[in-house]
Image (cartoon, rainbow, N blue to C red):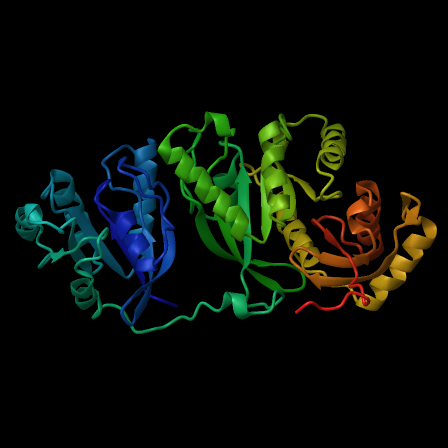
Length: 456
């Protein structure tokens, strides 16, 4: 495994900016507001020929453990505990503060190697702060600018003795979809305070993510690597905990817009989306919009109904929710519905079997011969209607891709085929080949006219 390197420091010293530069992507939200980062986030970082896991952490603050800031501090403590090296970052323009001194002492007591970084050193105004950093007793400070990329060579020289040269090639995309080495990307999405972080913590069996009664604690889409064992095999899973998504009209602040954008990207890059809704208020308008977005993006969808332990008549509630889902989510009838309680663990063991089942369906491939046998029977039972006295003919169908299953049919007057008949064909594919819970795309294409000469 790669060496883990924790980026620590008080709020707003530029940890997330440096993290983004090291991993080469804008993974962490960056804003001038202190305390944007609340959970620890990991990413594969490269600096010259060094490869390591960088951990972005919440800003270090002195606060009671029960307070939000105290729980954020625990996230940083856990990052320090699991890392091999700590990078203590100070703001060179602001100079050394009492908080910097406090946390320098804490890091020295941890026994971990510590490299001191004086960030925001792109101008002469920071020179005094760089010299002040010597008083922290952590050796010579490395003057850098995470925003402008200055001082990266000096940073390399400082951490190279501690980082073993272990290169990990990120070849997930090159693996076959069912390879036991390929991580299954699962995004947990929903409204604010639906219990998404609590569910992730329950699944992995540890308090990995910050939780609490306050709405909107999660701001970044945080990825957590985990392994789940089914009865047949072990699955490597990459879980994405996302920020809650409110109605667009209510999203006003720049920071919340960034958080929602991060959640939308998590949906786009996920393979299975778990929509977490609440048992007392299932399928509110915002839930349906999130589900519709996931299905339009072609993702496999699972509905998890949280706070099931608070429901009295569970059979009646489940029937009502199932009927509602079938009526409101026609793009994916029979979408799996998993009642659970993230807080108590009731029903959580049924979630991953449902996730892996829809993932298999999402990758389903049907033989062309079987498809055309089915098409012949489907047309015999219910022929396409005639338009303007001319009958529409569907001659051939083939599957062109998976993820989601996509089919192309050669059809005369394709633009005139009624939507209802197209829906009849899609539902027929679902029933005939058992692909019921994922979106299916059917593309109608006019056959080439052999009597039209090529003009080229």
